[in-house]
Length: 121
Image 1 (tube, helix red, strand yellow):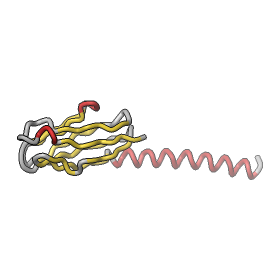
Image 2 (cartoon, helix red, strand yellow):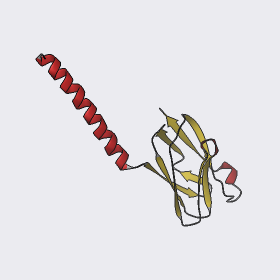
Image 3 (cartoon, rainbow, N blue to C red):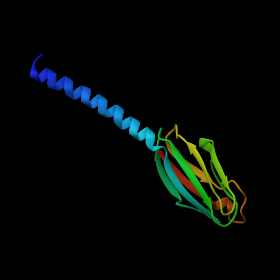
Image 4 (tube, rainbow, N blue to C red):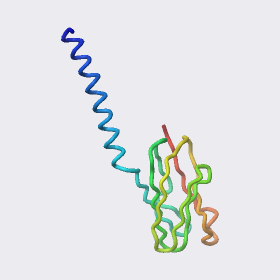
């Protein structure tokens, strides 16, 4: 085997090994945590971008009233009572822009309490 072929083979093997190590480290880190605060009649932040196929945990804190956050197209939802923090973990399986809405009636502005979730490749 020539030195060039040996070096080329070594680079391929090293790349494969590093790829496996990086994948395992990322898997151990756990899902990305999205901290969302709900107050009458607003979610903060109101716009979030995540990656398709990457697990995320929505951490919903309700400050002033019972609130829920649901993304009907993704079949994901979480409800937190006043003063509570609740979580839901999911993995987005499709790309697009999805409207999240409050799923617990919280007063006259309830219908306008929305947020946007962008799922990219």
